[in-house]
Image 1 (cartoon, helix red, strand yellow):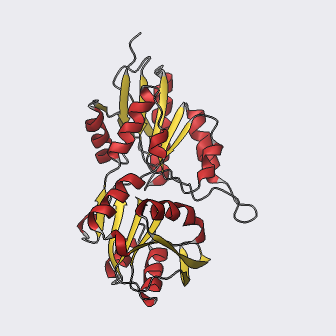
Image 2: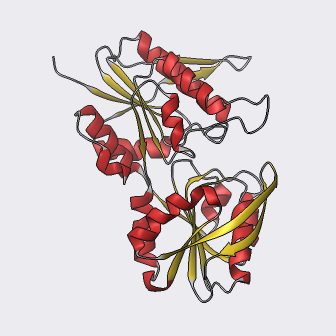
Image 3: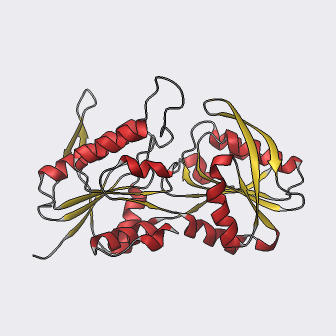
Length: 315
């Protein structure tokens, strides 16, 4: 039997889906998604997918609950249409910050989302730069966590002087990620000692490492309200940093992130990928530079379909 690949796009990030389709030279299937009067989602797959290997591209980004429910319904529709395999390609995995019980009587929502995706019928999941690597263990199906570092490193190497560059982790939890970048760029590493005073509220306290006279690049997996980023940039400038850049895979950019970035005189540029579509205000802001991960995700899809190794995409 001849194997078939089918690409299905949700509505959360159509531009990225289109780019992936172009890289693979595979036509994109847009399922018929409608809303009933009470907000319920209706889905119909208008292409025959019986026996096909289907890849559903859907970031669970704002509105997170709508995007997640849409993904689950599409996967369920494909399962009932007798698809041979269903791979959920989730460039941004929503709820990933709720990966443990941070206080008594709280949920582990990242695990709940993993269970829902699995029960819906996904046979594999591909995502990018998980907030916490242990989320992979929440799944009992194959799971690939691809890194966006190659495209971010390419931008940095083309636009910044590596000789005077130092990589900066905005908190202790991101040191391992930043150490990888530092090693690839042959750069030193610094750390921001950060203390949180509440959800989405952070105060940068101390800079660990010598940043005086250096160009700094703050590296994180996501930027949400940009509070941590702005505080880190101010702390670096107080410690003598010259130019300050930031790089993150997921531009969540919840209010008032764009305003904070625009008004932060210490920040020279913010490099983000297109795992989440940017608002019009974000696209118009010159400080924000966008690099695409479509090529990396397309390679992951191609290798998965051909049963080839995707391990080279992990580094």
